[in-house]
Length: 86
Image 1 (tube, helix red, strand yellow):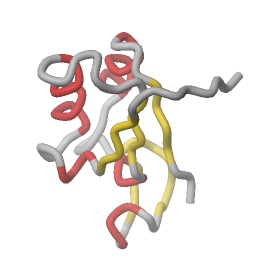
Image 2: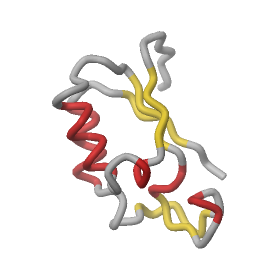
Image 3: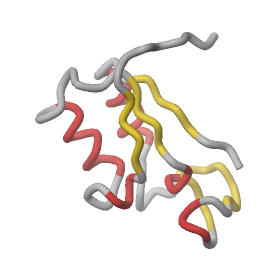
């Protein structure tokens, strides 16, 4: 079930903010705690071969960019996750 939200949305490539999703998760849990309701991750956390993550090979997590733990931490922080599927 999807819910509509109206709070602030952070839009970012994980590899542009520290290098990994964990870096953004840390920022959202510390310095930016409570500032964002949702996080829109561009598709660079999936396995891709070119085009900065928009040429997806498969939808497994690229472990060098993101882990299941990172995603679970976002959930614990109460931050909704938005993704592109291409």
